[in-house]
Length: 155
Image (spheres, rainbow, N blue to C red):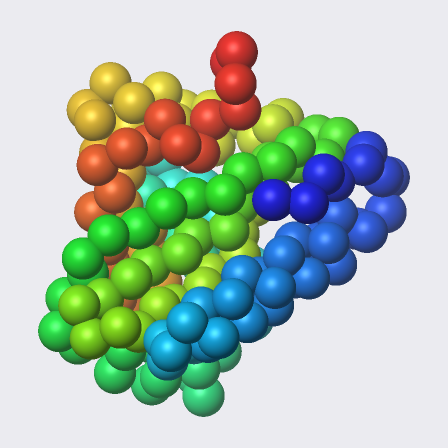
């Protein structure tokens, strides 16, 4: 993943989106169908009030493509991670057996108590749920069996 310099502004987000486009292009050149999600809000849900997982808001028009791409199940995923000041930038690459790949950029703040609690619980349990949902709560949930991939090294 491109090195993201600490920036008080959201330049790191632009860098994350550029990484997503570059990764998707590489997959497309290898013959894969790709879906790039243009993430809205990302919320760490520590289970205290609502769901337990990383909740990513997906635009309605992209959710249909995401659902279609993941309809046959997920074969593997990877998480590219970088830190940008107080933020942890994430790029989820979700692959299916049908040679489709879904790219989901996400983030959380290192100062967010809910994110810290979620990551502690997920690491202890060995699983974290990635919740991809629309404003009307249509959702796709993916159980990630390597939640440590979301935690910056040494934390």
